[in-house]
Length: 337
Ligand SMILES: O=P(O)(O)OC[C@H]1O[C@](O)(COP(=O)(O)O)[C@@H](O)[C@@H]1O
Ligand SMILES: [Mg+2]
Ligand SMILES: [Mg+2]
Figure 1 (spheres, rainbow, N blue to C red):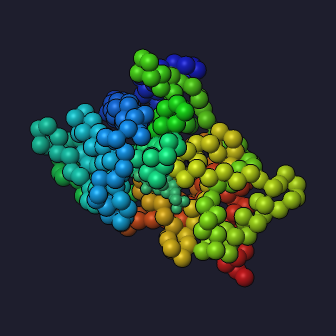
Figure 2 (figure 1 turned 90 degrees about the vertical axis):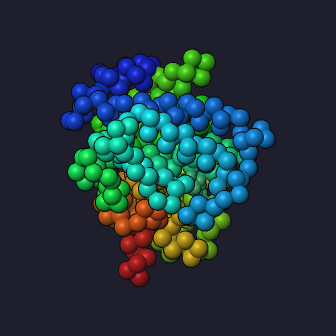
Figure 3 (figure 1 turned 60 degrees about the horizontal axis):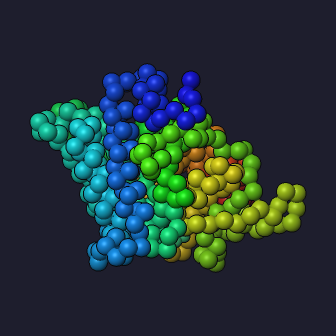
């Protein structure tokens, strides 16, 4: 039984047996993410100093200007995962194509692929607001010993074997699941050790926080406008409180602790929404569901969507179960009108 304040290392070893394929590789993978996160955390804490602030002058496949920390975090996670001989492929928000990792012996023997958003909330880096890293892990579907293919990355979220995020905020936390609940570990920066500070994290079924960029209200679908009006109505336990940080990781983390819903809907600017299915929505959906919450595109369970492209976007509704269901009800009603 996990004990509060046990170290992440102890927790990983203790829970390794709970994982059906417990050959230790997934534990090593989580350990390498733990290490890379510490290195990135060190740089994030320097955000504001000249050498780590601002853009690099390139854009990624999303057409977004890449920040220095986007590129730095991307390099550190790729390096660490590659060196640890656990992954056979990596896909990242910052790389147009997936990366094939053949392994030191060039034999493609590794079993896992990782999909990641190395730095989430990039627009908040230079304004000292919390940012994060998001990761999603699958077992490969192509034969071991052969190079990975797109098939290994385009798996539905319900096949994830692990997922999680790191939040670089007032403290640095690693929150993850391997399908046996959600646990949060806080980094003690003085000694570089993560401790189990948030065992068995849960979304309350109901909450009173809604998180959506209301600046785009005019472009939102009818159903989302109706749900926002519902949240703002002076009835029962409403109006709810509006909170929007603009970093997906931070908004979801807060709502998981306090109860709430995060929505990034489709809009005229982003008909399919802004967030990426494979390395933002699927991992956060796995976390949400493992914490008793819910995640959909307004109609369909996010983790049942069959991906078709590496960087595809989807509308995202995620959080406390009853709040997501109410928002889905608004979407259905608006559609039927
Ligand atoms: O500024 P907007 O349009 O509200 O978008 C904010 C959303 O975009 C994101 O910053 C996208 O993620 P990246 O920063 O990784 O590109 C989310 O973290 C956040 O929730
Ligand atoms: Mg992101
Ligand atoms: Mg990002």
